[in-house]
Figure (cartoon, rainbow, N blue to C red):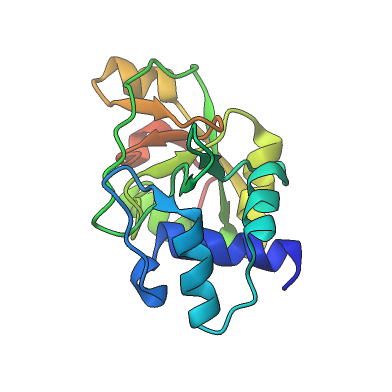
Length: 181
């Protein structure tokens, strides 16, 4: 398994499907590294402890965190699994945040705003370049600007994950700068 394949597999397991390899996460998303590796191997995946540690330390996204004792791992955000309910401190956002999406989703976003889908939060970026990279994963990228300052003033709550990703429950259309359409 390549490093990128290992990282994507770990993200899938820790965010969405721990039960697919018999793994149990606690309410904050922590799982033992040994249990993760053993579950992956039992499911026919060639994953080692070294692969897990490399995934934590590599990549610009910084998707994971190790426990203080180095024995457990968790995904920082992006969970869709109901047993994880990470708590993040509420924090005032910068005036403007960004969301990368594919152009084919713009009509739906125009009507409904940004919704978390199967995840627990909408993910936003502090910079446009990161949002472009996120949007490219889903097709031709389009970057939406979010009036986060006005949203916050209207009572919407924002959080920032340890890796700098901004999180909120949803972004209503009136807080988006959308292209005409």
